[in-house]
Image 1: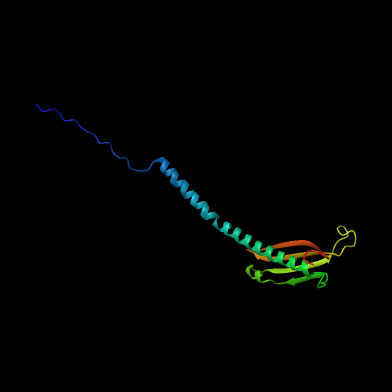
Image 2: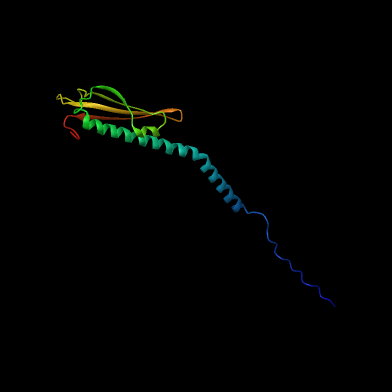
Length: 144
């Protein structure tokens, strides 16, 4: 007599992907898409910050020069256009400074003080940008 043999069923390995794996892949693809989509605005922001930094450096340098030389060189009131080597790094840039007498609201005792305004203008992505620094300079001030 022959006994029936025991049938063994091997557990089959499941093929395909699980829901967790699919979710992780979708999240990774979305994260990568967000990085790629925001890359142009990030680079534009960095470039704009660079131009603003250069303009601030040029304006500060001009204000320091005027603080030292305004009264010794007897610079007149009015607006003057100037150039600086660093401005070549900023597209379509112009620079000017204006000198005017101190307003009576601030200078109450006829002090020899002038209001100095330095302005740097440039074009960034078809938009006009500017930086303006204003200070007061008096006789016997910094560097005099």
